[in-house]
Length: 216
Image (tube, rainbow, N blue to C red; front, top):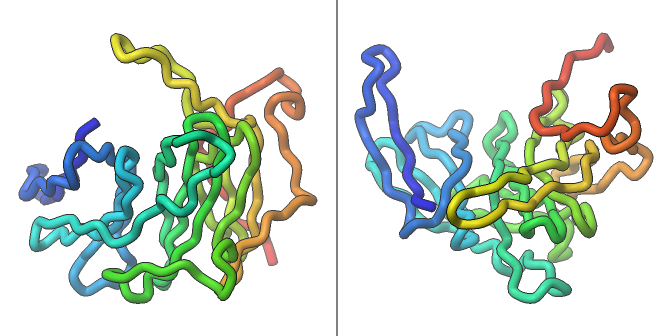
């Protein structure tokens, strides 16, 4: 998988810049940092486990964080696959899904107050990490309007990929809810929605998520 970010001039409907990210790192998602005067963004390399800071004006992408320490130690040499990203409105926190090739999955929150030097949050190493357990495959992320809860759909992909083989990163078919604090994440164990048996029409694969506003 290659990796590049293309900057578009939407008024002219043309690509004005192509930014190469690493060496065949495999990018999946990119998010602009809200309020950043330099219009920088973050993306992740699935093949090299790096978080990249993208300078959309200068045309560069720089590795600024290594997800290697978050590997599942019980699985021999698993790919970590940092994939989908979400940034809060203030541009101070980024959330990333880690998908260990159908083995297990995690959601990580980083402090990006200094975009060039993202850091783990909290005093404990795992404070900003939620482990969704064996056979999970976290993919899509959405914050509630007050940004106090993070909703995660847990299905990635099962598909033949000719000629390379088969992608088998199905996930656990659940929707997870995570409580978000400034210095840690906390899984809401009281929320339990399993698309394998909770949907009247039969087993389904939750992928994208839209959150509707509620009346306060």
